[in-house]
Image (cartoon, rainbow, N blue to C red; front, side, top):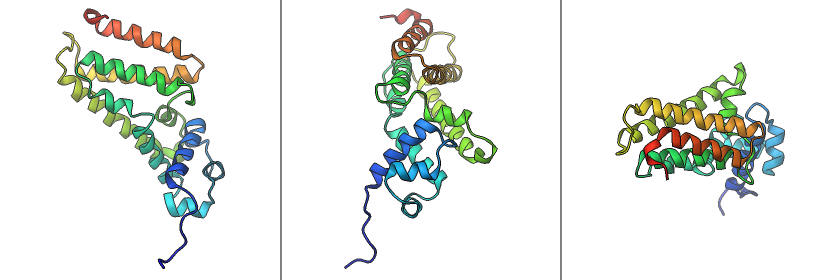
Amino acid sequence: MPGGRPRGFDPRTALDRALEVFRRQGYEGTSLTDLTAAMGINRNSLYATFGNKEQLFQQALDRYAAGPGAFAAEALEEPTARAVVARTLYGAVELTCGAHAPAGCLSVNTVHACGPESEPVRAGVVARRAAGEDALRRRLERAPDLPPGHDPATLARLVHTLTDGIAVQAASGHDREQLLGVAELALRALFPAQDD
């Protein structure tokens, strides 16, 4: 018989529950008590399975990028710059004001709501965001339909600025239809010759 007791919980389900709490309350606003209550485990199980709060948060960010935030990576597979930007903007709207999503964006909220004691967490999120912007820039450099005068690096930064703004507006109470209108207007402005 193998040593040790089997886990009495599913780590994937527990991680999903931790992600939900972090999305609602932010990194600093979430206590270990909040996490253990939502995950249905005690602190010893949390530490043994996920490490400390910061390590759990990093795992939750990975889960976020592969789940609710997967649209960002999927957008890079689109065939044109316009389609890449459209999928990114519309994905940001769905992420931040979808039917079952907490308003706002986990990474945007973390960057803006971390105090000095959580600087390593904030710096890690900033690095992830910079990597995402760089991946978008590289994809736009290969796009066959980049309008004249559109620098890929500046366009990638603008798209990230727009998605951040969508997240902030969603957290401020703007609804899905309002933010879809913002995304549509941005697409018309950025790709005027390609309007549908």
